[in-house]
Image 1 (cartoon, rainbow, N blue to C red):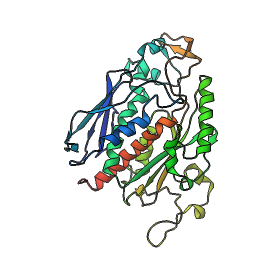
Image 2 (image 1 turned 90 degrees about the horizontal axis):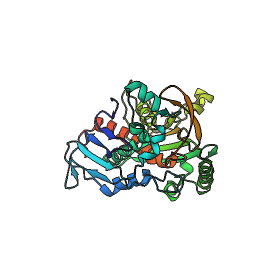
Image 3 (image 1 turned 45 degrees about the vertical axis):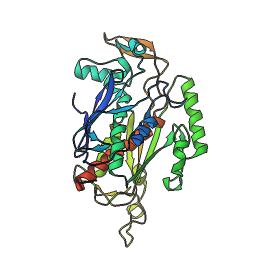
Image 4 (image 1 turned 120 degrees about the vertical axis):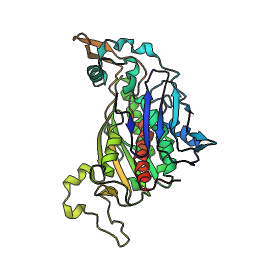
Amino acid sequence: MAGNTFGKKFRITTFGESHGYSIGGVIDGCPPNLTLDFDFIQSELDRRKPGQSSIVTQRKEADIVEFLSGIVDNKTTGTPIAFQIKNNNSKSADYDVYKNVFRPSHADYTYFKKYGIRDHKGGGRSSARETASRVVAGAVAKQIINDVSITAYVSSVGSCKLDKNYKELDFNLIETNNVRCPDVEVAKAMTELIKSVKKKGDTIGGVITCVIQNVPVGLGEPVFDRLEAELAKAMLSINASKGFQIGSGFGGTEMLGSQHNDYFNMDGSTKTNYSGGVQGGISNGMDIYFDVAFKPVATLLQEQPMLTTSGEIVNVMGRGRHDACVLPRAVPIVEAMAALVIADFVLMTNPNIP
């Protein structure tokens, strides 16, 4: 299976399945003599792990990362950094009901048709559990680019939306509520919406907004390695993601060019930032901001029609422990993928960091 590596200069290759012995990864291209903060790495994993609140999956995993190579006395050596996270609470029997059926809107059918075999237990390699490895790599990347600030938050759940510009928000409020929305009242409404949907055995989607600040000018390569193109690829590689827009996004289509142009100040900054911090595929030093749309989780705790491996349609009742909404746990994943992209471009520019 190809497609398990992300990045050019700073690369992460992930391995493992949702119900296997462990998941993990190998980070290659990390510069030597970087002193790693392992408590920070674990805290990032804790933000993504299951079972952290009543509105996410109740699978109980400690998600403790174990580093296997590439580090001496808390410092990177410049060699590959291997790590693993053991699976300790996978209830594979819950998935026996799916052994001979293809669930709607899952990877079951496409994996089977492409490879002629699939792991039905927890979705195997297609499970969002794989993203824990990305969070570890992203936490390392954040320490390479520690002058850059990357903040993601939930800006909508279903029709419940946060109608504020990111500059009006207090980012310190993001981690004060289970849904990770930087507005206390909107967060309460989002939480109640998720709970009501979960009670029905259903799921709901929404949008995560990410803001990257203090970005140096000059990141990004024309023509095909544009910064926004790499960010889009990173975000759309996350499970359940279905849309990406940067800067003015689709809203910019309703503006005139005279309204949309970001006119310069004398210091090279711009009076507006409809470009979202990227022009010509290269960062211009302004804040980078973008939205990522996530679909409702495909696994429902309801009876649904499913296609059997023998070509019949049967009704199957969903089982297992699943998120009614991926957004709260996807926030650190979005940040991690953004960090991987920025660190990759920074190391292309300055390979001698730190």
